[in-house]
Amino acid sequence: MSDNKPETMELTTKPEVNFASMVKYKASEIMSVAARNVQLDKNWLERAKMELMAKPDTAKVCLTKSGMDSVLKALKKAATAGITFGGIRPQAYFTPSDNGSTVRLDVSQFGYAHAAVYGPGGVLSQVPQLITVHQNDGTRVDQAKGKLIYPEGGIDPLSDRGAIAWYAMELRYKDGRPDEVRYITMVDVRKIEEGHGNLNSPAYKKDRAQMDEKTAVKQILKWAFGESEGNAQNILDALDYEPEPAIERDPARRMESRMERAAATMKPAERVDETEAEPESETAGESGDQPSTEAAQPGAEELF
Image 1 (tube, rainbow, N blue to C red):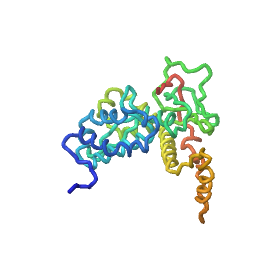
Image 2 (spheres, rainbow, N blue to C red):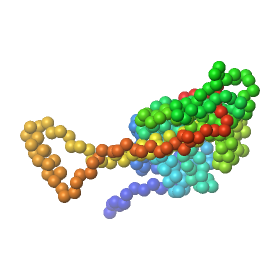
Image 3 (cartoon, helix red, strand yellow):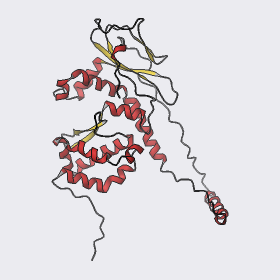
Image 4 (tube, rainbow, N blue to C red):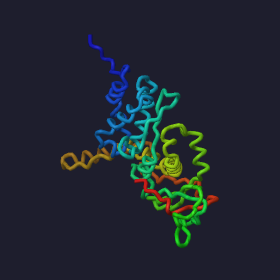
């Protein structure tokens, strides 16, 4: 007598085998929500596996069901936003969570910028530069124009510019909304790192300034990334609508097809208009604010 029970994923003592098993049963589920660039990338899941297995503390989560569920959740989130793993400038990492029993998706500063500009729901028209601000710089924010105003004659990079006070980015939008300057103070950067970062990690000990910049980029682009990710999800939701019927080219079937479509519309309830409205944009949290210190042009840094 044959057993007609559906196949289910069975865990083993080998993380790589469990990941491969998950891909076997869940790859189509992941790709159903994935951005186009992810769907076309045949090695996307393989690079995700390499990133996950590179560190013992992330690989071991593949030994439990809750751990594998967290991996699947992270993969879906990355796929939806069109974020990739690996490379010289990785866009995301797997970070241990829940005392090491699960992982979460940690999007890098490159991933935030990529999704906000090139992702399926990207809202920015170009990757912004990170502007490093020093206490003695004479630059100010002109929020009405959405730009930084530098002192006449520029800034002398060899002068005593003082300590870094804040970071800024000039954001340009695709949908025609006004340009704006977003910023974060060094005080807030350090508060975030002390509250959420691992200050004893090799990365912080090797180059604290670089980690400060990464924190600043992620916080400044956090809103744009969130809106882009939401737009990407809305795009996927729109694909759930029934497609319009193809035009019948065969003369023998044309009239019959017209009658069938007419009959389908004769229902008591009105058909729902499937045209999506433009999403309302939220007011930027920092739009009308001015930092207590001022910005510096020489600190501009290309993300890509």
